[in-house]
Length: 112
Image 1 (spheres, rainbow, N blue to C red):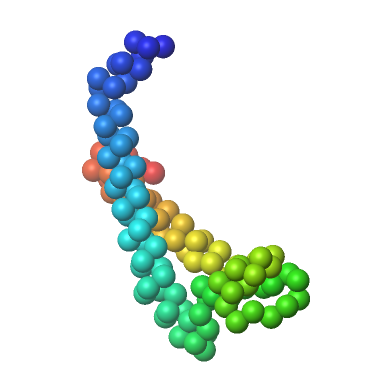
Image 2 (cartoon, rainbow, N blue to C red; image 1 turned 90 degrees about the vertical axis):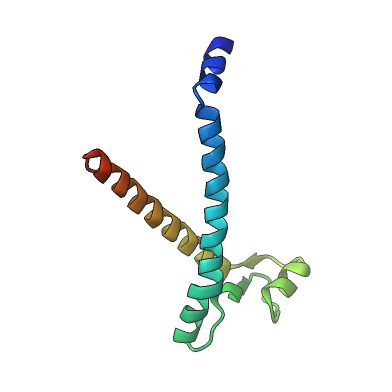
């Protein structure tokens, strides 16, 4: 097993993997900013000024003005607006990866 690990390191796979993780993390931050700072405000405007990122349901029946206030109080909260932001982030990342893989396969002469 040690010799296999050494061969893995020697081939450069670990470095390629590390570079991929670092680039992926940076890309994730860009996508998060795209969703939070550009897409969601437009969606909020189209929905009558609703800030979807701050939409939540408190399970104990009490009222809180903000998601932060509800969480700070310790109330059980379903933060469906934050969930929608994460789903949108995922869809954008998945679509970008799809386009990247599609382009790589096109250059290789294969189909997805």
